Length: 394
Ligand SMILES: Cc1ncc(COP(=O)(O)O)c(C=O)c1O
Image (tube, rainbow, N blue to C red; front, side, top):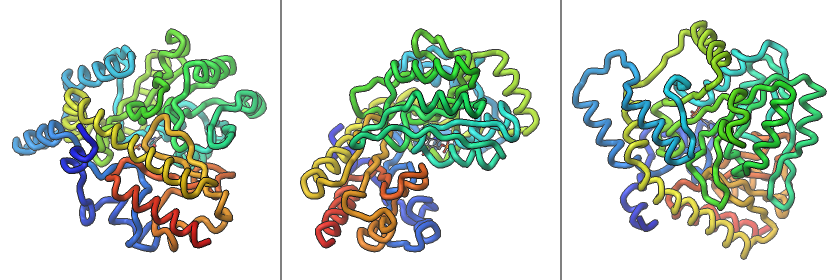
């Protein structure tokens, strides 16, 4: 579907719908009149098939305890097979109400208080929190940034693992916020280091379907002929792909029986809620029939990213926009114009934007911002215009 057509059909005003992104601006930023380019959800309605499946479920009117039907498993297994070449066995699947909550569970289940857990920074801030909040030691290995292109410092990663006796690595693939879709070579290298030092890998693949550039997204569990599968826990969800985050539905994949037994034993101790019937209904419909909608959405994201890249490249060339290979979140380095400590004043008071700030993602990232491209192009255009206008006034 054309971008204009997609937006006319799916773009919605979200004000007054208890939207965190729009209705909590005042609470989060102290100003309710900003253009919200922050939290990772979208201004687009889910595909009609999803809404209709939910309507049908609602009309039945009974919302008692639920279990996961085979039809759900099949929809998810087919999605992974068709989209990612990943053959998932039903018995490897578990559920949770979100990726972030699952990260906390994995840290608790597979490490002890005081153990070291490693992450590649800058990275989605709940990765930091899941380690720190549970009383583990946070070890960070900084990605190498050359003109906005990020790569892994494998030597630093390995040294950190050795020196800190790291037990767990939380990977982000594709990587939020630097937009990388890791190549098989990169994944092989990092997973082989983990295997060598007996470091269990949690691979957060929530952005697996949002692929914008040329690189193919490869699930960690099938890298190099599934050589590392035994050492990997994969966590993914339909929430980013189909804008379903509020429905709290997430898939966990563990193929190693011993790891699964330990996870299941841990699950018992927290007596966790398994499934939300509306989330399951929505996800099943999305996995079964949402592919066309997703293709159109990817066109909008790419269009928005290209707009930012071209306009800033033309009018504010000292701003570095990191190439977007995957995710719908772009990472922008403003330091060519703005003193890092002035970023917030510039972005909020002058440009009137609500963004995610660089320092939320990593220690040395003050002066960077993250902008959400999964929105109506009119907001992206306005955001870019405001940045350019205010840079010209400096
Ligand atoms: C890498 C990553 N993991 C997890 C999440 C959130 O997942 P959930 O809403 O299922 O907790 C996000 C949301 O932006 C994300 O970017």
